[in-house]
Image (cartoon, rainbow, N blue to C red; front, side):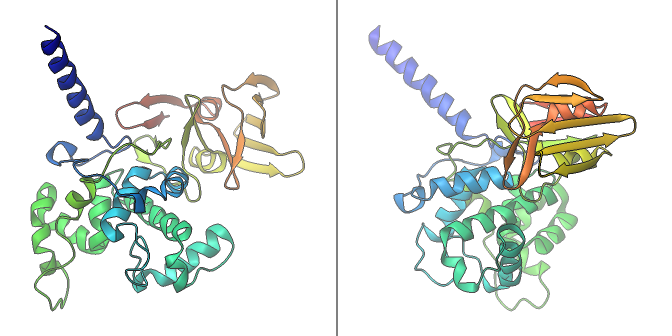
Length: 318
């Protein structure tokens, strides 16, 4: 009897682990069931950067476990393979890499900075975040585009539609004047997902307004204490409001029509047309962005809001 119970327990644990490993929390789009995930482990050369994966992923709304898997595939966590660094940032992205440093951190980054893990991982998170947005929340397309480049992947998708995965082996046919017999890694997604696990905490989420995915530049949404916090300016302006910031009082004022909302950093108290309202979570400052509970700001401006647990997405409707 004990043997039967033990076997059943092991089976339950295995099934639970399989189901757990199969889910990228905020993915939507390409069916994940067709991929084997988490079949290989990350090595210590990669896991030593877990804190950076965590910070970069939560800043740019990319599952940090995906970032770790990309690092594992690209370099195995070694910075001495070549000049392209942990995330293999080639010379083709140098101009954008430099601009990214200037725009987000106040200083242009150099070619040598690609070998700085703190910089290369953050830039890779930014690139993948932009690709996830481009492909409407689809991590699978975003990952393949990270390898192929989105112009090439778009041509494949335009030609084959939902059958684009099987056409990746012919990617060279979609690149003008390509002189070689193959192009990129046609199994890049599969190679990444074999290293995908859930060892690094991810607090990110997506936000859609009437079905449209919102793009965030320097700080994405975060789930904190069961509340989804978002940059107040990005969301308010997308919902048709205007935002003013008073540095002295640390107060953000949102106006839309006859509605005025005031909220203060580190305070749970807000004001809607001078009426006092208590938020579930106080507003806070993160990466130079004022983060506020999205439910509060959406409902204050007259919108309905729902949470989709399957895709970790806040759905706002007018």
